View (cartoon, chains in turn orange, red):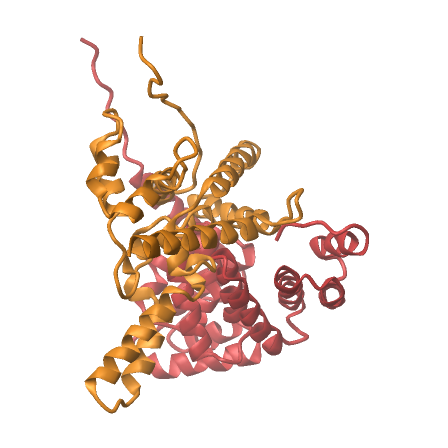
Length: 234
Length: 235
């Protein structure tokens, strides 16, 4: 007899594009890393507190596939001191699940900030580098139009328990929506899915808050917890 | 052992469907006695493709710049595009643009006409955004590229960006473009509501949309919802 055997849950989701399937996997892993373990710290929190990724990986069940292990290892890497460029390769959660892939070269916000920095004159290199560092922190903490209004820091931290629940509810709703809707093309399906998502995220729930407000508040809280844990470690 | 049946390629079928659309478009063009010739292709393209003065001027300027690279075949392709646009045949518009018109020098006006179809049929958000930005820069007096940019930013979840572009579109749309004006004012109202929760402002903006298109079902429904019990309504 085995105590607490690993439970394998099978879920079916219908999604409009192959890219969103890949992102869904990543999103689920991000949620899982932020789930508190039996009222203890989440895996992310353990890594923030110890700085030791190996310990977290060692606690994974042997059935976790290699591909998923690699994703987890990547997600648990220490965040950069400067600009959070790994945010381009995070899921961005349910609010970004269907946004077609984009990257650093398309980031108009950063490119504009950088162009302004280049145009400025500085008394010396030290001032120049300090301004650049300040600029990178500003980018990290400014809501980004291509991340559905999340800041890169909010994208980096991943979603929590509440977002995981909301995402499941939305994906279940989407399945029902697809079963009664016909689409003329894959593009038509993607655009309609995005329209449904944007309507849903603004719709107040029974507690009066919209999914968007709940998601943003939870990600901010996760960032605050991370800051507290890192401060304790230091 | 069972003999494996040969799977037929879908490519020839797709090709024949496109050629069938072209054939139908050519029939429409022939019925209207609008055969492009070396002596009339510029005039035909201008007369057929737009009645809007600003657009006509932009198209004339494009023809003047690239007339050596354009010609009778280009005019025929433009007339076919117009037939597809009139029929609102999204798949034919997108396919024809990609297979025929994209081979000519880039034209911001043609892109402004087809971009909404590319977005809604192919879901190519980033390509559509780039085309809209180009059209907005090249043809700053047109409302359509700004409207599409507003819609794209809404899809991206950037509601402030969407509102900004809808505001730009509202400043440019003319009374003759009533259908488009109604959509712009309605969508602007929805974005204002999402960002500020100001019901009175939304009611005023939706009333303005209904002024342009009194039978706008979505706007009527939204207005009813706002005046009675607040609830969210779809785009």
